[in-house]
Image 1 (spheres, one colour):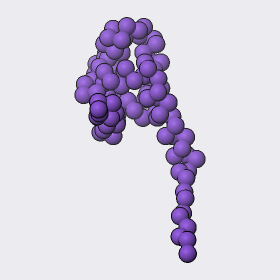
Image 2 (spheres, one colour):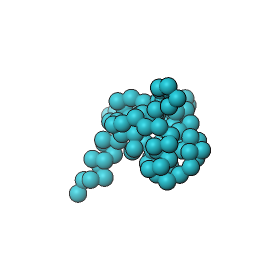
Image 3 (cartoon, one colour):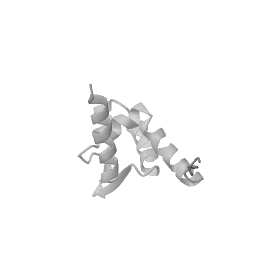
Length: 103
């Protein structure tokens, strides 16, 4: 007697959202930005100077990261500070770093 496994796929909405997140992580510039935001809040200028890109280019990438829910922003006077959106994103980074450092 065989036992049938019930195979299920995520919904189309879940699939699309997940793919967008993986796409965001899959871009080198966005990954650098996310890495910089690991554990700190930074302005567009600080990010742009560090990764040696124009403010406009960094702003475009931050827009994508905000749209995917990976980055949040908070205005403080004339400055807007960017940070990783939540603990889940921090956990993803920790797990990726652990994975690539395995022997």
